[in-house]
Image (cartoon, rainbow, N blue to C red; front, top):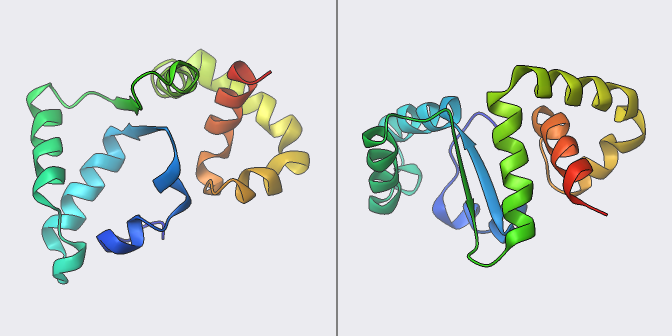
Length: 133
C-alpha cells in the first residue's frame, strides 16, 4: 500500500492496525495531507479525526516525529522513543543503519513477516534491538 491512500476499511485490516504504538514522521504526515486533499474517492479522503490530528500537529509546530502508544504500554513507549531517536539523531541513525546492514540478509524476511515495509526495516531493527530481551 506504500505510496497510495487506502480506504478506512482497508486501514483496519493492515497489520499495523493491531500495533500498540506508532511512529509518524513529518514527511509521512505531509504526504498524507497532500494525498488526502487530492483523494478522488470519498473512502480515501481524510476523516474529521484525521484532519483534527493534522491540525493539532501543525499547531504544535509540525514536529519531525510523533509517537503514540496505548496508555500503560510502557515497553511500547520505549520502542516508539527509539524511533524518535532514529528520526532526530543522525549519529544514532548511522549506527543503526550500519548494524542493520550487517544483519539484513538474516532478518529481512522476519521484518517483512512482521508487516514492516522494507524502508522501515533498519529503524524497526534498532527499536527491537534496544527494547526486546
